[in-house]
Image (cartoon, rainbow, N blue to C red):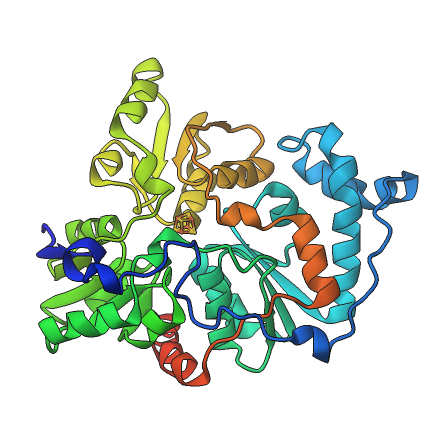
Length: 373
Ligand code: SF4
């Protein structure tokens, strides 16, 4: 069913009320807390490449040798060793999203996955410190679910065009316009937006969440293309918002058709944040976790993952015999997270993510309702 209507910043909000366009603007708790005052700031370890480091990290390089050239490993390895040593000292767990680079995803992360998997693991962790290798809304979600833990993000400027597209005030205006219609919010939003929502969802469970409400209509925020995809999978009427992922909206149906024309056997799998004409070219549409599972299950000879570039590298590590064709786009926000910044974060215990407790309590209800579904 087509979506009922799509509202967005340009049409719905007075220009004066629009927010700054900085990547992570408008997210709750931007100001880092002075975690460094509660923790010792540790001296920087030696980052020299030598035979001992080579020997101790050889098993990790073995994992990523298909996607990281040997010439790069002497730079990465000392950071990998230092981070893994410091993790234990700080009682920290590192969560890494599927879009993180292979040396982070495969060599220092304790938990990897999509937003839903990371949210679930964040709720379960026993460690005192969580280092979120992803973007700011993911770190906020970890903090919302773990208010008593220290949550760090190695670069708080790691924002998201979807999270930036909407504010809590926008949600309140939509509720006034559609009284009684429940609000489903994609996790790619600030804590302030989650706090105004009835329930959160991810791309993995969006259809299930929408249908769980038993409503005739739902307001689905903020990704217009995910809303269209959900609308195509359900009879529930969808009221959408015109937010877009700046990475997935750049793919075109035309470029995928050219790949298909050059190799009719190639498999194309796409993320539902892509425009509808791109999804129409795909053999499978699913969340990042769904796409990874699809490749494991089908083991295609050649495949295009229509999503952020690094994910193909990370799946390639596990499936070296599959050829990943890469018309990929990089997420500039995810790529702000690097090994040197993760090390710095653990040494200084910066930057700590803070969420106003009142907002966190309201947002937690929406996130936990999703997790318990
Ligand atoms: S890939 Fe898109 S949705 Fe994900 S963090 Fe980057 S901009 Fe946001």
